[in-house]
Length: 498
Image (tube, rainbow, N blue to C red; front, side, top):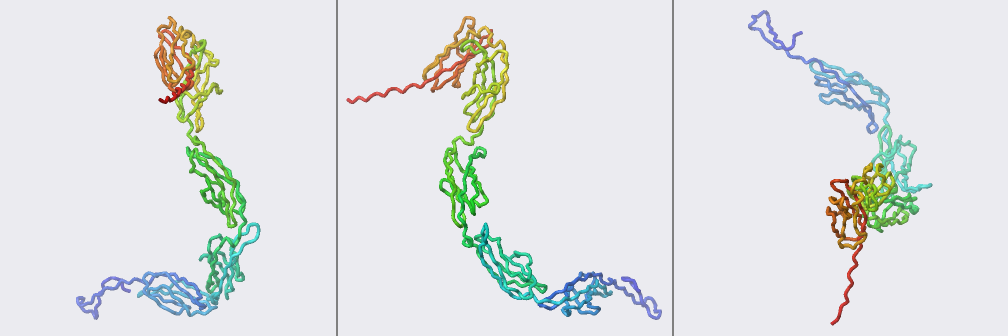
């Protein structure tokens, strides 16, 4: 009844306290904590046993294994115990006692009923052989069979080291594997199982060859093609119909194998082509029974294929007085050059009125002063077309009513030879003595002289324009065309022998 960890003095026969004996009581930890017992029954080599395990009990220095109230074993650190002294058909009750110097603590009670042990399945052998299935689509397969294993309750077929089937009944002694591929090797074993364990049979390996199911020669595919563009890079898109019995396809270009493809692929994009070149294609269908070639397609790629469309450009329009014949209202269109454009089409009110190769055009067709007109220009090139913004213009009613509008006609020859000086001049009247002139010769050059001379470097048809005006009047404009012809080469001189 003492208190732990305190000092106690003992005396005998009332001897003086100074002669007494002092004793310090120990610190007692108390009995162990609780533990939980687990157990399973087992049949090893046909003999029954109970495998016990338990959780650690805090403060325990020793464990006692009790069966039906009697101690059958002890352990200090191990928390497992195997009871081999059991009999099939009996039930046993187990507990674990955790002990230390302060006492003991009992675990839960575990009851185990011992079932009769069955010996594992007996040894047996497996075999495998290839065959070709029958029907509309013959295919290679493997027939796996095995001898019966004594005491077996079920079988599992293993392929290449892994279970290939679910559990098969003990009366099943064969299986056909229909999921095989030509060129592959497969190893088969069979596992027999019962409550006493399992046994693996001997093994057998087979290789799937094309000779197992000789294939019917493929039918010829039908090849078609269209040219595609990936940005500015061209490509030939090939597609073909499925070939009966084909296991693969090979695309040929100019007689050389370009790509091998599986039978599920029926198209191919050849992106390694060059504009301006010609290519010849056919597709070969193959299987183990032979090959069949498609029709041949020859493709010539234009040099201008997959060019970018013309770049955006700006259009302006100005009302002028055209005095090429008699003074009348006209509209002069000019626009910035569009990159990648090779020609331009002029549209008025949605209708095309001209095709030009320059960046200007004078519309003289039925232009009425005071009326409004809508224009756009379409740039065309190898890569497509691009339209300008629409330009709406109302013609000034007085465009041809200035003092000099009717008088400033021009004198320009209609035809001249290349590299021959051409004289440009105005027919001036005294009322227009202070007139100024701006000439455009149609080849990208111009002049502000009243009577300039210009030499054209190459043959062609050029449209010249002159804009005339004075300080006292509005400007007027006149235009026309000049045809420049080639200069014939000089005649060859005959050699004279001396």
